[in-house]
Image (cartoon, rainbow, N blue to C red; front, side, top):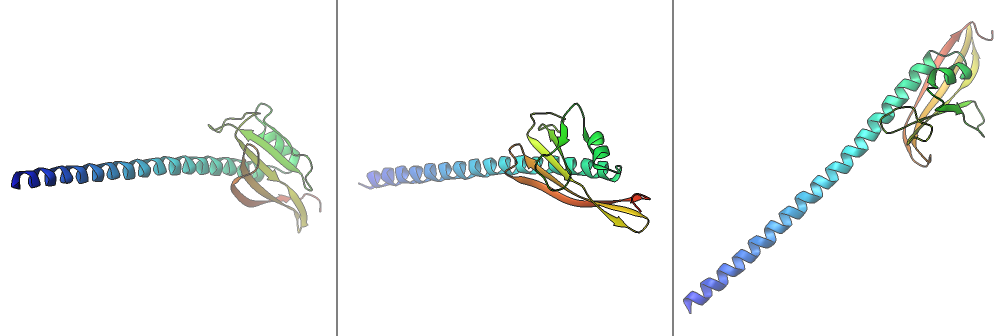
Length: 151
């Protein structure tokens, strides 16, 4: 009788250890899957910040929306967005941040000018969205002073 109880206890202990091991494997699998999705989101944010930074540098080097379009255009990936109240340049890039007319990341750069002493001040809002424009990934505002313009 004593031998039967120890065999039963052994089977219960092995069963509990197996269930514990399965739970640990499930938790670790979930953690790694969550880490992978977080890594993909971080990479997308990094790409969006780089594209916005490039656009901000183009804004700083431009004196008009047309010049901004010329600076951002690489192989026809840019154009003026239609249906906007202010001039807005739209540039499209793929996941590797290469210019692409059918890309997955879209950069919108608005251009609003106002008179200032000694010239004009151009304000821009740079927004990076996903391909269909439903999700904003990153946005920043910048301005450039255009000396001697419009006074």
